Image 1 (tube, chains in turn red, purple):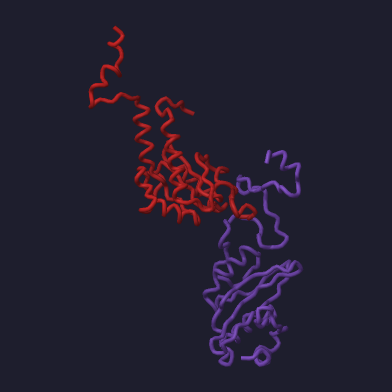
Image 2 (spheres, rainbow over the protein chains, first blue to last red; image 1 turned 120 degrees about the horizontal axis):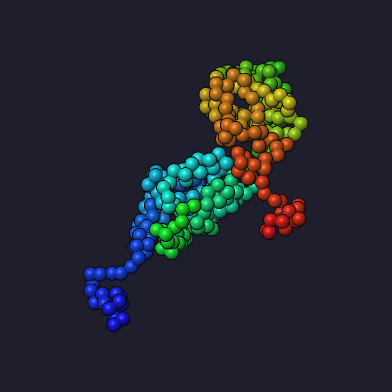
Length: 167
Length: 173
């Protein structure tokens, strides 16, 4: 009798049918099409370019760069954020469409790094925008940035996007 | 050209504009020039056929606490000599004529010196801040500059972990 309601058991023999939730399906799509905004501010951006290059090849995770915030899902803040740049960075972040994610790449974006004592450098990008993944290193290697991207994907897969409450 | 020979040549050409000369530790010749006669002195250095200091290699500002200074590194291809021209300025009213007419490329150097030292270059075509934002207060490379605790609502201060153990405990560091 109960077997009638066991959808999984009933349909498991059908190779064309997969049962899942809408959240899981959409999250899978979102996680594997993370387009990132080119936000190269200092030497970290060289490593960011390497990560997009053929050896590390971040493209195979569905991630490719966009030159406009309006088409980006992810902001990789690669480099030193000066106080002069900070309002511009915030503005670019505000122009990105929800849902959006931020990787603070390298020591400078995390906390000011070697420029901690400088008069003109923002001590951590988290003072102006919310950060999802902090990536240490000065600069981090392409493998590390790939790992940070996988962490963001992990976070996206766990989200309940359609049931998210409005803030 | 030997240093003594160069110095006697410079003093004969520059006259009263030349205040003093010295040998620098980097084997360079220091030439201190009167502030009021800077433009004519540099004009002589550049255009006099016997001198020919036609290349401006560098331009700097300096803070000696009691006074400020601007420094020009000039190179003469004809003499194969390098000199350092220095002009001392009042700390309260640091003003020096711009050398834009003699060396066009000095424009942004002078803007940077204005930005970081607050030295005003009279006659400059576009004396605005070069590196820092326009609404920045103060000139950071001066010795008496105190970095502000915030800029446009962004917190910029940090606890000094060596001087204030109490402050460090408070932040949970």
